[in-house]
Length: 238
Image (cartoon, rainbow, N blue to C red; front, side, top):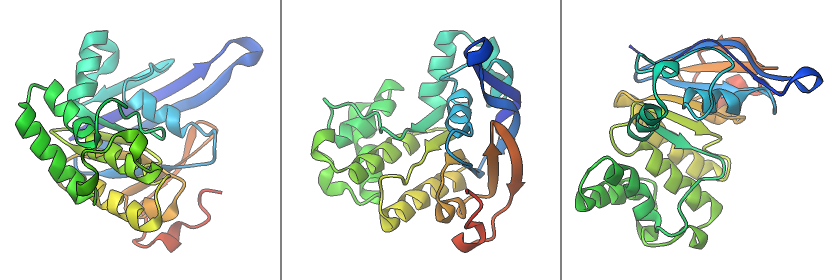
């Protein structure tokens, strides 16, 4: 079953001479339990693809389906509800709430879905522990390092009954060991049936994926199933 489907999606910013084609008729299908890595040079449209897939932006043309639902036919409130309940996001700037500690940030999506505070907190603490952050659960975002904030954001994205995970450079602020820990957590979510789309420039990270999509100038130019081992992908992102 397809969790995410993009059908000939294009995105144009600006008008006339200022017109920029961020995406050009991109078609992509991601099934349950599948991780897709998206690679390409800076400005190629990778992040735009993620924001459109997550209903944070609307395409200029084409269709986006999440769980079989066409986002264009949904009301703004219904799209917001879909994002909260079904989609986990990991952004480059983390988007943690500064007034909540690490555990509260992670537990928040569950509480918004109506899960009791004690149960939500228990799940949050387990997620943090799996990423080596048990001793930072009561720390606030401004007390955490960049790498620690990134891991908190990952924990928040994969907690609960999410069907789709969208991650923009999830290992960007991490050393290689913690980057591998994050990828292991995303991979574990996929084994539970989550579909994941991970934007990365890191060949080692991309080697965890079931499929690697290469995008350039807003178009998908190649797709491949990576050989296990990062050396097989070196040089593809240049």
